[in-house]
Image (cartoon, rainbow, N blue to C red; front, side, top):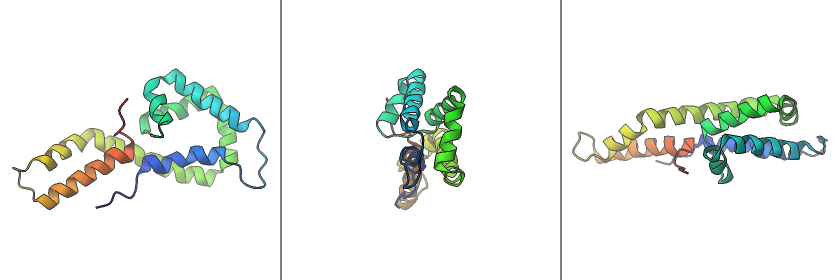
Length: 151
């Protein structure tokens, strides 16, 4: 089994998209600096548990949700400008990945450990193939949510 879909990676593209300027676009010259300054300022206030994973390219649902909420509250015009520059359609597509990241986080946190234990117990009624599949599903949730990273 290959875990081809990882919402944490799919969710990271919004940052890249917001900081790239398409041909013919004319955002304000301070847009990207304002975006980065607000983003890192919020993350710094939220602490190392938010900032460190992000600096190591690990996107996690909880820290990302807190960062986006705090950015929207601290700089509402920037939030509107991001929607304008990126466009509503790509942002709606991104929300799907963000929601999946939340679902993967919830699944990993609620049943992931139990699945991992069940998959490693060779004395249970599961075949080797079933245990293999359970391990891959648990890994998909853990890696897809970014919860494999620990500060």
